[in-house]
Length: 235
Image (cartoon, rainbow, N blue to C red; front, top):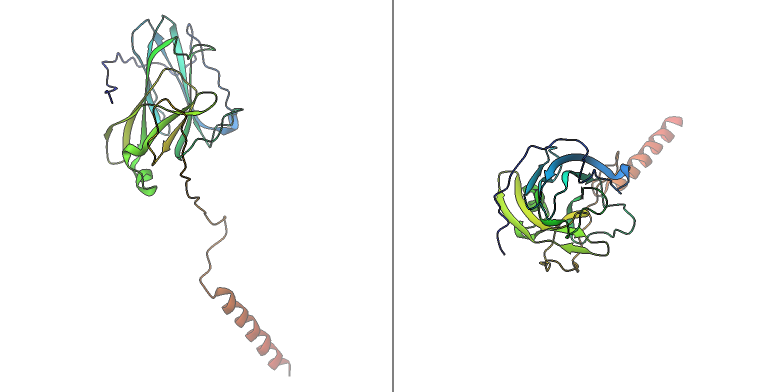
């Protein structure tokens, strides 16, 4: 797999709506968005531009776009979702999901292969999550919804620290994405078909505690004893 490293021109960007190439419009219901951030950069023909996201909770910390044309100042919006995307028609992503995230670039009609020569998504996954779910770093894939299926993107592990593994994925368009753990290695660019299913994790409801074995029997015995003693006192 070829390296995704490039010599990028990195501007600081601004947390504001876009102009020229267009501002972004999200199709995600507001109630399903946990965090969001908008950045903007100037897109000139063939010149890589880096969009750097600073909100700590967001899994994607940088997006780099090399445009095929001159679009001027253009925005990208990242949305961290509370659960699977609720956009009409989007199905559940396969595998064990670390995060659901939307990336919207430019105005209507901008985010297409004809306009984007190359795009790189830089994202991070918590190492504790990998350990808790028995995944190796190489089991992580960035999946993109293509309008009909979830497609596996070319994904590479780049580096790591004590808390996170840092990865990169290649794309030439933007839409809903899912960061997934997959034991079965997906074929890049093909619809992801997975036979494995994640084991559900059950958590006691608020106010509930697990009872030790025999708890109900002991409680019943105590109640009978109390009734017996009460009857003796009334004699």
